[in-house]
Length: 259
Image 1: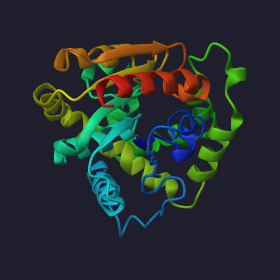
Image 2: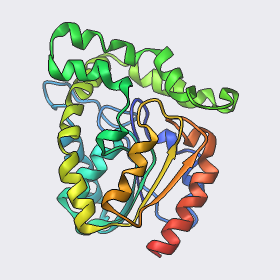
Image 3: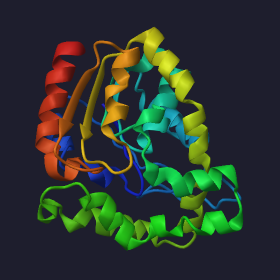
């Protein structure tokens, strides 16, 4: 089981999920380049695009000898994981998407400032996105839509803020926010993959996510009619409050659909 994290986090977001899976599955949770404990090469040496990050993770799976695996995709992990599936569909045993979007109807209005940068990549529009890197935004991502924010440990968001504060990381993150438009451009190709290959899909989402809304989960049934759609009463980082429930749903799903 390959767990692929999102922005602005790293593999530590899976700290409660891994014990739910490790007794039955070989679980691998890398940090993406520029995130967590993985190296942060200079932008002059490594172009921070989702295509390049997917190539790194793809090679990572090959070095580990992962010939067939299920993927868990969340946020930024979705465009990385789906690129792996497009490159080597025969390697993907199943897909679990937790607020990992690949449909236009799943994109909320919260993306408007980012879309403005896509449409006009000026310095002013780039600078307007710096608020996405602020601690108060990290806090918002972790707690918005959570019925009881007191249930959310401060550990995850504080570690995220630590990594975001590293010298040069802000420009890396702005590069990726700008490059996210390539993921939207790939939606049609990903949907064709889902439609033609029909991998087992579990879409289990925090239903109160302000960024990737429930319609994005429901849309998977359009291309994979037997996709299983479930919602938990949480926000974007649903594992912070529902790791046990999500882990149980994954064990059930994988046990029935993969073995």
